[in-house]
Image 1 (cartoon, rainbow, N blue to C red):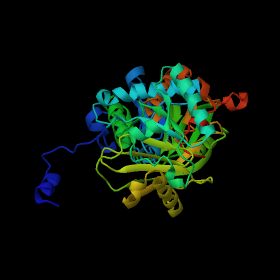
Image 2: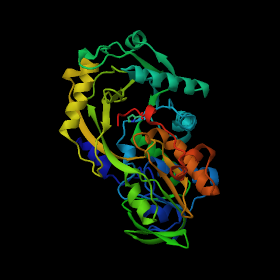
Image 3: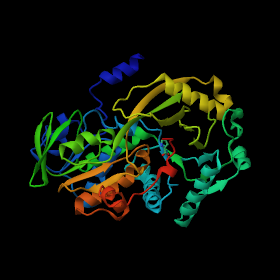
Image 4: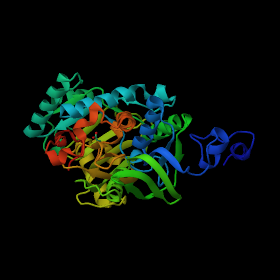
Length: 424
Ligand code: PYC
């Protein structure tokens, strides 16, 4: 390590630059206790993007600041830091399109609002179709999108080739050729960790407490209403509790005796070594089970289908790396010499209709933000906004009414499978 850097690191003159207050400093700066308080108006379980965004909007829009975000690991260590950072609103159902379109709108202004560069860049998103059925779904999505003012159209192979010259439209004869694509110009990518950090700082500046390494072991309920949470650091009373924990949702819902149709599958991804800017679009192929974009650092970020079995584990497999590499090379033969640098997995809580579960629940004061499958990152700001509204007013926000847990009893599903980028 260069000596000057070491000297800077050890120098007490410079204040430690923190994104948000460490628990030990909570008291000094804001006159609140260093440890957990006895009682909060709202406890948010899960310090990922969704939980932190909900805390931020609770404070910003509803002036509710007696809020604790409890995170069992470190912030952004779950789905937020493990996804492939794609943002889009080209969904299939009107409910989905409206919801994700609001998210895109919020994302566009977020770097400025949170004073943090999220590296949000519009790239243009192509969902390739290799069959008549896929092309039919692309047309259907384009119709719904355009009807709701979202920029999407079906394009032919010449258009795709012109804007993505390295694509082999024939897939080398190993796979069905590309017949067209749903093209969504506003499709974007962003730096996922930064989204968690920026919301954390925004919430913290407004007085929200963020407690990492704080696991919730049980939830106390009395007369059908939440009264508090048991943590590894003791019991805290809470008037309202939000579960925003992605792959761990079923563990939390068991604590309050709620049944959901969620099943958990791992989803793996990898990044390549950094290479010169080469791909300025986002390419998805449901048939080949791949999606790929190039990050601002030059790495190719890519993933495939869910692991085909239920499992709560974030291990990586060679099977996945081999399968994904093979399909990537079918589409982009020029990548055959590029090295894979890192591989990882996240946990996806899947619903039967591929839409989330959001809003109030039969347990008074217990709110849920779950069922994020493989599409949670793109919804981060709108989840924060709508869950904050729902918690503050105890009334589901208009944009999430369709995603209520009760839809599974009423059989009013919101079928989004046709708009999922990932094969399932
Ligand atoms: O829904 O856009 C998406 C997506 C990309 C990778 C995983 N999900």
